Amino acid sequence: MSHSALYLGTISGTSLDGLDLALLEVGPDQLQTLAGTTTPFPDDLRRDLTQLALGQVDDVDTLGHLDTQLGITIGEAILAFLQAQSLSPEQIRAIGSHGQTVRHRPDGDAPFSLQIGDPNQIVEITGIATVADFRRRDMAAGGQGAPLVPLFHQALVPASSASGRGPWRDLLVNIGGIANLSLLPRDRTQEPAGFDSGPGNALLDAWIQHHKGLAYDQDGAWSASGTPDPALLHQLLADSYFERRPPKSTGKEYFNLGWLTAQLERRPDAPTPADVQATLVELTAQTIVAAAHQSGSRDGRLILCGGGRLNRHLLERISALAQGHQVMTTEDLGIQGDWVEAAAFAWLAHRHLAGLPGNAAAVTGARGARVLGGLYMP
Image 1 (cartoon, rainbow, N blue to C red):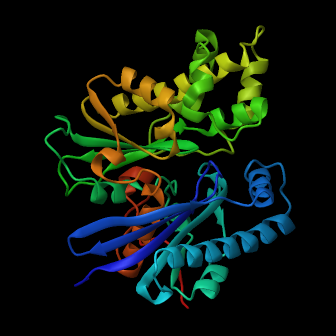
Image 2: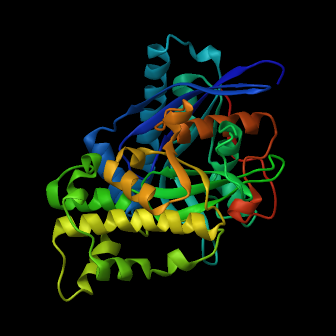
């Protein structure tokens, strides 16, 4: 590219709180997130998507209906966002739409990952070239299809004198429903490492929704009112996922309220709900920091993005456990933390149009670098 261009990225994350949109400017030596927003889902759409993602509804008619409905919702949200930014569709080079993951099964005889939000609807509504279905090409090449953000994180986050002394200059942690880590190498010619450490907000959100009818624990106030239960924490940490070596990825189809309830049923004396919430904060914090240490990262910047960075109690626990690291958020680098993941898919759309790979094979376990996604032309 000889000049800069604007791309728009969208993702509906595992927390299912709405559609994140981000406007990214890409130039020869430039990568800048210019704006972003979150468009909440209508209550009925969020309910239906949640039931589908958790396997509570499994019929093909529902899948097809929600694929279309979500595609229309994404297209309309993009037009509203562009209008708010005083931009016309003609000014956007392409949309990168991740869609909503309703199943992620990276293991087994025929691994697959399924994201819905019909890109045909998006391109029809917006008139903008749309790249979608990013994960399955990596899986066809033997990869996990996730996480796909580490290459973008490497391009986005500049090195600094505060970076680590070991092989990794920085560690970027996206805490959505699931937490994923990007380990950024000191040598920029090398690929980053990365994987899903386990639950981020998924269990915390599910537990407070179940007991208090709230979508999330504001500032971690409820978890901070409880005390972690050592026996329950030990039991949760014994799950085989945490022991697996990368490449590895997971989702809410595994770490969900059913998983937690089954764990609690094994306990003769259940802790109080607030103590369970405090234990879940400890689970997220400990698995993130343990994953960092297992990867050889023990100093430098540990940079948080995603909704979990706003949970003050969780942030305090990560900071206490990650001694030696400088714990910070992307805002400290001038990058709005709610927009990072959506911006990554804007960047992946740019990579697709440029014929450049979007996966890091060392991260996903694929046989090599691949151009990701399918292109839908207006």
